[in-house]
Length: 428
Ligand code: SDX
Figure 1 (cartoon, rainbow, N blue to C red):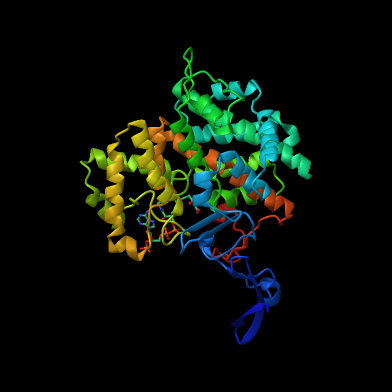
Figure 2: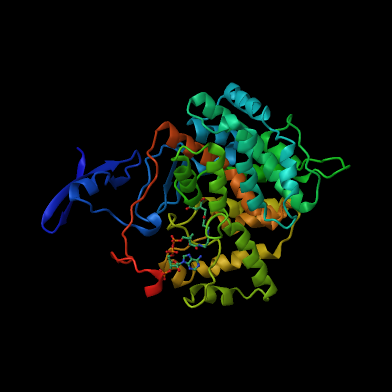
């Protein structure tokens, strides 16, 4: 039995259908609202109560702390899967068998290079350029070197664009890091696994034997899986709305990278470490920073805390917190800011301000501590988030295009001047 929502405006009633998802989420379908009411729309700043699409990719339950990719729990995937098979799952809907995964990886490896002229673009950046700015520019620039990946309509054309960017993005990410570190822009080794090859591209030093560290590879594999998708977050919504104008995949992803850069979003992982460092420099006075976070006259926020959807706990943060201890122990790293982070978390979770507002650690609170232990520079934390989120962005863009979603074009409520006669300059 389909449900109906009835709204009454000035005594007149309007009926709107209610749709139900496979996890029993309910939504009022307002696509006919303006027509039915003669022009009345809705408004919802930040889209806190508004769904932008129906999607079959990721399910989140913010109250229960549930996160699933295509029905598989994030706990299972983080523990048992590798990043490339999770990428395949997100994009194509099912976990690949051995043959499907091998073909997917081979198609990606065939694209795991970029035109040598891309190095001239990288050369043009100052060494101090933030790698997120470099990465979004290079991702856009890829269009010039891959013109067949712009107007992609058929499944074949989309598949080709997808394996191209999955092959080239790790190269661009590693080279953005190597540019900043003053290292030569080198490739890794395509005979290695996807994540293993990326780690080699990042850390291979000139004229030195490269020794793989399995702890680093396993930790990164888990972190990339945990970041792979998160339904309609800010950067994914950006990728979707840019792609909805039929802009190509690469430029849609470049827009998503820029949205992710913001410190309220993916940039928070860098901001958390900077915050923890500041607290350490300030003598480790966590109580002072808890008070600052609660003080409405102070712009300071407890970075890595709070979430638009999770109002209980972020399941990714729980997994990363355990992994932080494991990785630092395995690498023999003793990082005092891990203890500061744990102290901050304990104090916040016992404070009524955070409890009332249901503010818990999110994915960014502990991830930077692991990246740091892996030898990744702070400014590279958000690019690592982008590398992890890449398959999710691709999957969401692909779903939007396959479902032929309409161009995104929200309405507004105008609050400016009403009609005014033009006044010539000499009379103003
Ligand atoms: C990511 O959407 C996703 O899925 C994102 C993400 C993904 O995987 O894609 O999960 C990745 O972006 C995680 C979030 C990383 N950002 C941060 O850690 C930055 C710090 N957190 C916040 O700025 C904030 O919590 C947001 C942006 C994450 C969520 O903001 P909302 O949902 O708009 O909530 P809000 O700003 O309206 O806050 C509600 C209340 C306010 O207080 P009151 O006005 O009710 O008194 O909580 C307060 C806020 O001031 N608050 C905080 C706080 N976060 C919210 N107070 C202090 N410190 C914080 N971190």
